[in-house]
Length: 352
Image 1 (spheres, one colour):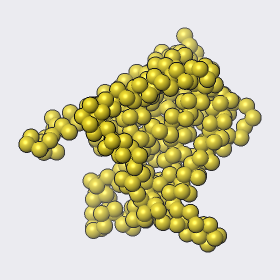
Image 2 (tube, helix red, strand yellow):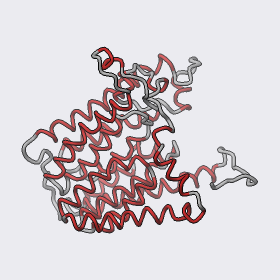
Image 3 (tube, helix red, strand yellow):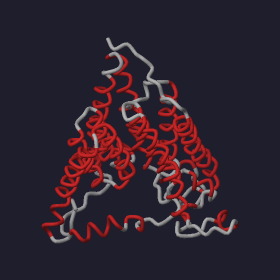
Image 4 (cartoon, helix red, strand yellow):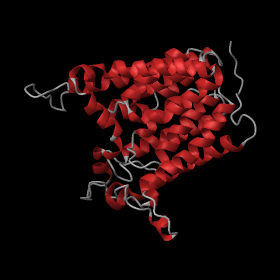
């Protein structure tokens, strides 16, 4: 760790310390903005591409997450987005090398692994999947090498295999499906408990198992449609929908886990109005979700409530946010999954 025993731990009010902690995420945000701009420039004019760049780097949700909240979601998001761009630009081996880094950086990227594998297989064949997969595995090994040399690899492996036991709750401040199903009590319910509505039908499934089943029911059609349309914008929409589905129906979700969907949507938000509205809507719901669970905002919005989570004063705003997130998934999922053609046709722009 950066500050081990015997070293002074800077106080959080130290502005230089706070800035340095946020620097990796801030740099990653800027790099993603440049990547989004360079890709947009292939389809639209320089001027319009600048608007797309501004829509990402000046997005209030992005700024809140990285600059104010101090989260590091931008780092693994940059790696995952870069991996998809490299594969899209016919560099699958390099793409999987970067994807290996993303997978070792944050577990939230796991949901994108199968999708990238299908895209690689569909566009470059099974042999290239094997080769690129080996490159990705080598990348993972390089990240794990310090643990291997130190003799603590088993601890890393144990942590990764038991990641679901770190916060075994129905929800961890994510305003998603489970927030409104449990009426705001998701953070107080272990996800090993049986879902009551299924119990009444004689089916005994835990919240966790139910969430996983719902996730795979959503991911299956997403994978199928991406297999049919393995090029831009389909692959980026598929990635964004995968993250959105993961956030909305899975248990143990934190309020910042939706971040990963935004850079993928920014990659294609200029393609048509549906995608632009989806990007705008999720940006609003994301910043609302974080603000309504951030201690300083909770204290400001509900100053007289001793409840750590804000109690009744913040119930309805969070309820609305959870409905918006769930509704956004439905709005984006069903048109894409059940249209016979490409559900998000490209709006041709001036490339001059």
